[in-house]
Image (cartoon, rainbow, N blue to C red):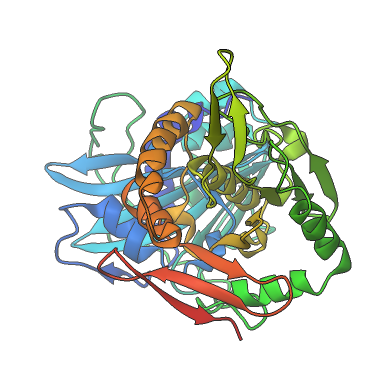
Length: 437
């Protein structure tokens, strides 16, 4: 099934679903007076905070579509990536009178969707499917699910009438409203009636458990995760092995899967410009459960070029843009699979010390980088770090200013003894440090 159709076609169709949403409950809205200035930015950075029900999902913010009525944005739809061929997921954010209400929608079919299905409206999809259509409000504790059998709604899951989508039972929820055409910037995609503001028949909500606290529970923070690693024999064996290989002329390392199994890697380039380790491609299915890795940054060593000139090959004893990019790839895979983002880590071992980086941000702060982007960033990184007298501060500053990454924490580690969290001061020039408990 081709999932690229998802954004282009279902965006408009979800407008119909929003009408169903309106007849289900009066949501707990979030109000902002400047919503029309940059609604997507507000939604990502503010509205989505603490929305744990979408934790672990890969939200494709770059594919967001905005729908307008007159000059105001009234709806934003964002696809949610998944690996199932019989599931379509989408986030919708309705903007009404400077209030935002968000919902997670799911079309779950008993059989795989075809590429043709992604060219249909919501009604047309449900008219031919057998399965369930559901929503969960991102605020409050409202949930609704309707079972569809060969295009007809039945009462096995929720009570609001049965019959085909065009039946009076369905129209009760829509209400009697005139169609309002929604224009999509850039054209393309279907149009649907604007959701009614005053639903005629509310549907009793089904209470679901409240969201988890936004703060990580005890034992799930980075310091606790690192402490747990340091108490495991197989982890320490791998660290000791790599500490003994920092004098080699190429990087080596281990990747670790979600099962806990380690795999050794020594496929590093050994040319005059690089001795970097090549880790397994994170986009391949067999590698998507890699949850962490550790690798060496080797000591400086003498080189002789083809003309007999001697020199010294100096490496940067800090994480590189490629290291951080791989961390982001692992995080994206963990989110898509529903695994905890707090389990993902990257470690770097040198003869002078060891560091880890871990992610403590929100799913909206995850990023991906192309090979070309990493290459460009690496050139800037070499220049920035080459003249640095504080690699920790320079690295954190590069993350923020050049890579645009927030929520990645740096930890300086003693194999036996304390672990120290290193943060960049507000001035961007120095760091502050705090020891893990």
